[in-house]
Length: 258
Image (cartoon, rainbow, N blue to C red; front, side, top):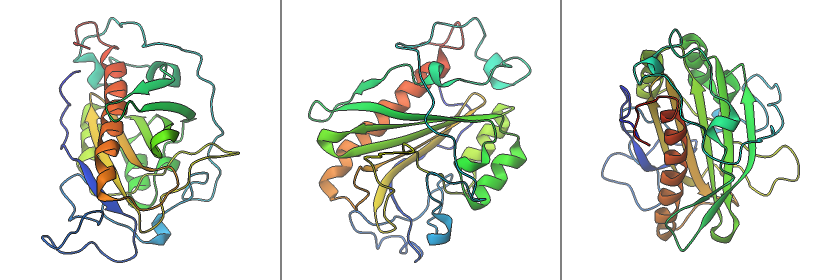
């Protein structure tokens, strides 16, 4: 997979959407919120924890979209430099392109993540709440595709979103900001997963790659707080989904190794 384009790396930290601020550095306990690192969204109060089926303005998110692809996308003809700007990479990503694989093996007790829902938003702001939504709008996001992958056997869910930004600079600006919180994706009906509870820690990562912003949230399907022993499988699930997305974006270029 290609090197991350102009981003601040972070990930694998426990985050809590709690009303209280995170404890001071050095006072963390397993499963608790840790001090925010650069590029990591701060903990937010209940007002920032928007429902996964409504936007910050109260408008409903779109229902699950249909994915017809069954494999990785075909190799494109662009250069890696082309992928840094809408001027040379004019087509926003599609759900078929990013989420063509319905199942992903990952290295934890033979676990398998299964795609359960994908969504497409031409107005990207419902993917986040508060300052993050405002920043996404200001930076000119042109399309968001997101998906939910679950592993029932291991009680794991991973939300992933890819925002198509106008330039690599815009994507990196979003990745390096502390604005945010990003909304979880759940099926619109008969859902089997739950929104992470306010006290529940989860694994979070966000990065920019070319002109794309990628975020992930991984935790328990039942939305409850996790035991320290569950962190390893959440990290493994996050890595599996991130490599799926990164590889799919890399394949837009002819010369990127993926």
